[in-house]
Length: 285
Image (tube, rainbow, N blue to C red; front, side, top):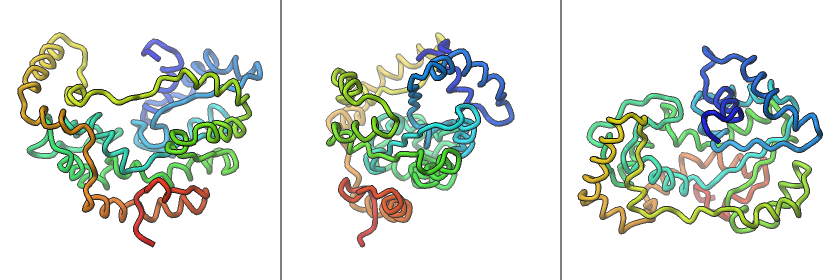
């Protein structure tokens, strides 16, 4: 979707706007122009937004759930979760290797002295996440239980399906069958659509090194090109390029296990999810 797409504008209204500036009528008008006709025709309409439960920039996942319920009314909610240890690695490549420390899902956290704006190693990235975990940082966002509870409160627990990214990856056929049954769509048609789906094979490490957000201005583009040229001379860039898959050290595994233990165990019990099979961070029993 592009910025001129009405559905994109609807998502931004619902999930990105602070309550001080949010206008329900604007969302309602966009909804009536885009999704309402398909819903009225009896078609099953699926709206997919990455990070809807954990990463919307209004900084309040409960408010996001409330806005969706107010606009859509009764609906089925699919919540996909992923092993937190894998997510921190993924987010490092997306944001951390340049220490984009203002990327905190709506919260403005002061840059960490000594690492902001330059390439940092994976351990420093983890330390930044740990230091900001109680300030709206990413680690707190991957405690899934509170977000799921917010959607259950708005839509009813029976209308919320929590499923594992790992199941979709390793048990795709069975997982797709379960999801189709839950939302009431044809499984054969869905499998056919997924057959040619693009799979993320992972960018080259050196490309990951060069990730940066710019505002599109001529000056920003010039700065970006200069920075990219310097990056290629940066010894850390070469080191990162040769180490495409950093590992969470045993020390950090234990620390993150303690942090996520209670939430992951409660979620596994309430939703009968075998998180231990995929090594979700938990303390030893």
